[in-house]
Image (cartoon, rainbow, N blue to C red):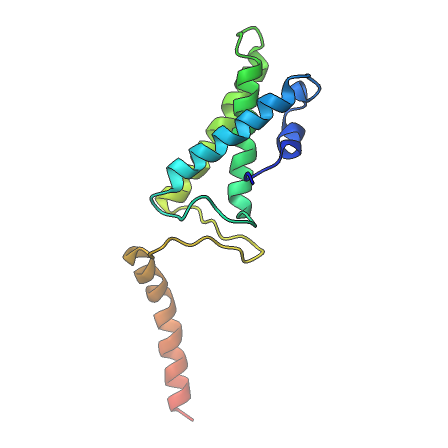
Length: 146
């Protein structure tokens, strides 16, 4: 199963959704988007992601697939507005992937279906420890006073 559905992508790109070849374009774009996501995130995560897919991965897949499908549909060049929209969708998705890789964006989602890296980078452990230690120390001092 892919990270998004044809309906998810079709809602994002009504310009080609009515096109008879849209289903094939969208299907191919979803496969390509998932391959790109997995290829980029493989160094940090176990891919392919299992169901339920993290919400952020789904959003990235929709944006990337929408851009890829539009690019394929309007690659002739005379539809500048659609090509620019396709470029923006792809750029947005790829920027999110880079933010995930850089550690400035997390795959944690509200449902708790988080995909964690196999190992937690030591810099993240120290950041969390540095933030928690003052609270633990204060709590420990209060407990000693009883």
